[in-house]
Length: 152
Ligand code: CA2
Image (cartoon, rainbow, N blue to C red):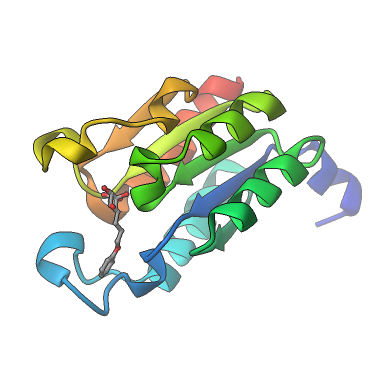
């Protein structure tokens, strides 16, 4: 593909938060057997079908996720974020998302509202335009479709 064609494509940043690097290797009864690498392949397949560019990154560190959100300004059209447990605790991540003014979609493997009460609060949900949850790994390609719909 020519560089000018890549520049015209929508650019979506997919962020995975803490412990999601363990997917498929621990607690399969809760989070399934799909690994983060499998999820990246699913995302790249969906992206090429839909003609968009996606970049996937994972960090266990709140500050690294915040830096990536800041750096997304001017470089990405949308952010899809599974912030892991930071979803329920991080006002700092929420502030970072609202500061960059990039359409952001909240994503979870599990349905956080069907789990423990402490997971029912989502700071990400306060600044995201929508949330997809409870679909396991299939939620990732769904989220790419939803983001494209939002970006128009
Ligand atoms: O359902 C989700 O996607 C969550 O964001 C996953 C987080 C959890 O804290 C949120 O409440 C909901 C936990 C991710 C931990 O991932 C693991 C994967 C394999 C083994 C252990 C943890």
